[in-house]
Image (cartoon, rainbow, N blue to C red; front, side, top):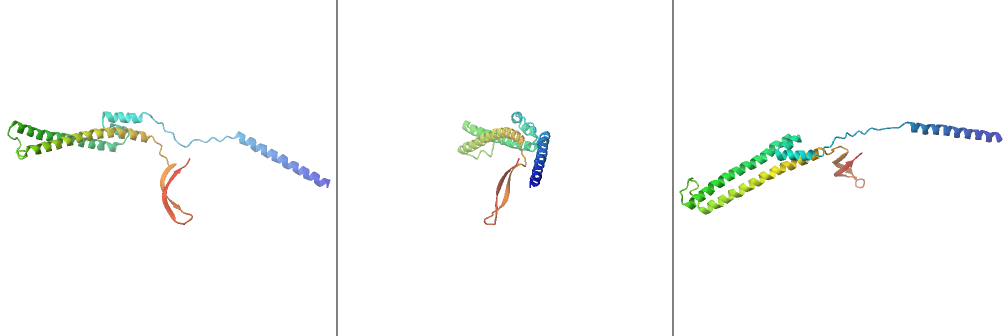
Length: 194
């Protein structure tokens, strides 16, 4: 019985010694190895003045801010909108002057210079003249509005061009299987992963 007790005691001591030996070596081994992981996300340099530069360039010359943002396809839209408004302003101003001069010459008692306007009475001349004046003012308002919209577009586009668009953040349609009814439900899912 004593021999069994001694064998059991030695065996137990061997396990304790082996446990301490392997335990301490694994602890020290973990202290020596350091795992350093590199960040896989590229950090692009953000220029805080980029939106202001784009807006300034568009204010100097319409479309220049879009060229600065490398959105060349927007330049014809900018010039088309501002150019159309300018053309309509000039055309309405020309017609306004034509009807105004006809009305003034009638008030002075002079004969009509334009035979097509000779058929109109004075109330029609005034009404048509006011219509061209209103259209001219609206054209000027649209021209200024498109100019300001050009500046705002360049500013916002420059701001959003530095925005991080990554697949880790996604808003996509999803098909979710309903566990209760066993039917597929359609919806939108917002996924965010690190």
